[in-house]
Length: 125
Image (cartoon, rainbow, N blue to C red; front, side, top):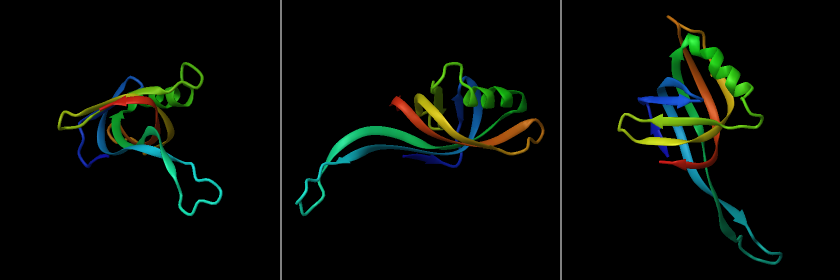
């Protein structure tokens, strides 16, 4: 899991933002395979997935592009591309679906928003 209070930036759906904070979790699921009569639960390894939230700040002029492309992507059911770059230089790249965006009022043309997301497919770290 990557978690930091001061991050370098994120590019989400082609829009560059400044990341204020993030919580990105990469995990591997398990699949129960317990049989009737077993005394203990049995599992097999499942698939990997990424999910989390990111708090970003961006120019007000980009707000309509971010929201419009997330609500109505150019292709139906298409995930958007994202790249998270931390101050350490570590970069994570992949596709994601944004579940929600909570944007606050802009101050001096800067919008602050929290986006909750789930990954789609392979991520590179």
